[in-house]
Length: 182
Length: 203
Image 1 (tube, rainbow over the protein chains, first blue to last red):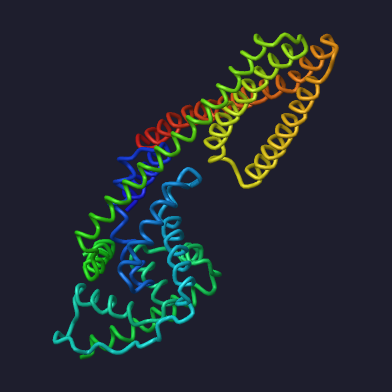
Image 2 (cartoon, rainbow over the protein chains, first blue to last red):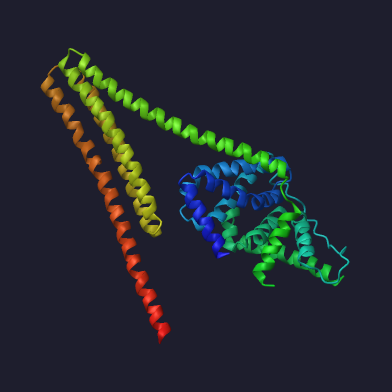
């Protein structure tokens, strides 16, 4: 993990010197995660690709301003979040967030669920939760961000981020417990 | 299985639930890197154009000095060509100074960063005001009749320019010295610590 962070920081430093190869590497490294995160916010796949494009262009334009290369991931997700929210606001969709429809997923046949099944449940849950909750949970599972980092990315207070994560985790725990009980 | 392994596996599984389509990803990356290349080229073209325009302006002013019969105009055009070139050089030196400061800033605290930003903003505003003031004086000296007075005015505007020509290189040199000292301090600390560690191991 620490090694990943250091190699990332080195790539960021190279990008700050306008190294195109390093930028390609960064795009390849982060795009699947960023794509997954943005997909949880924006439903339309084409919109996600547009946001991704804008995000990477903004990253390239402003990477020299990034003072701490080790905090690249927080910075990247923050740009992605802002671009996604801007698009949703433009289309008046940000307020009409997804309604919470967290259901129990008891269709599993096995008595003890494994990592893969658990992941499937998490993935389904992320799509069913309110946008605000699914966003923090995605950041938590994908990058293991701390509360303060999540608050920074989404642009909310640490208290709000903490309560959102608490609520989302509780919902998820209930569903996982239900799946284990079957 | 360790927790980090499970987390890694979980992240991989999670990403596998909704992976980007390979074709779309490839297409998106092609467009992205095409746009990036265009941006890089655009930046280079803009920079090059500004560079060429400024040098051409300075050169034309210099040529004008030779072509005119009026002594006052000749002095003023000569001063104008130097005025353009020197302020362009100041702008270039400022860029180097800010780049060095950016590297040095990374190790400093929030207060120091704020102080540096304020100072930089102040110096930039002063430089812009000085440039505007000097340009106005130069413009006004074109309308003088006395060549001696025109020469005095034209020479006086370079005093302020020289101040900035000293400020930025000296600022850069002091920042480089600071960075070098920090590097030396770091270099001196590393063997001392590693030596202590090895002594402790022996004990």
